[in-house]
Image (cartoon, rainbow, N blue to C red; front, side, top):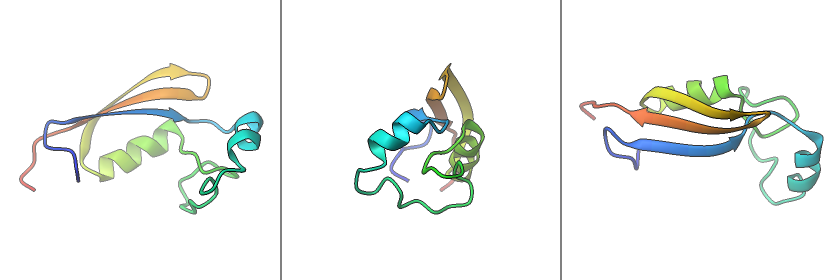
Length: 83
């Protein structure tokens, strides 16, 4: 992990699938490369719940989200560990 213990990660992410975004970004290289089961169906996006699961698995212990309507700022704190 590139973030030190007690670090803070801020993500600005789409968390719902919208046709306009798929039409706009779906033509860019790499948009459809993700194949994980936790992604929103028919998109490369993650829901807020999926982001929390993935970040927890990566060692983050606290999560806060700000925003709505499919666009969120996700704040994740990495706690102390003995890694």
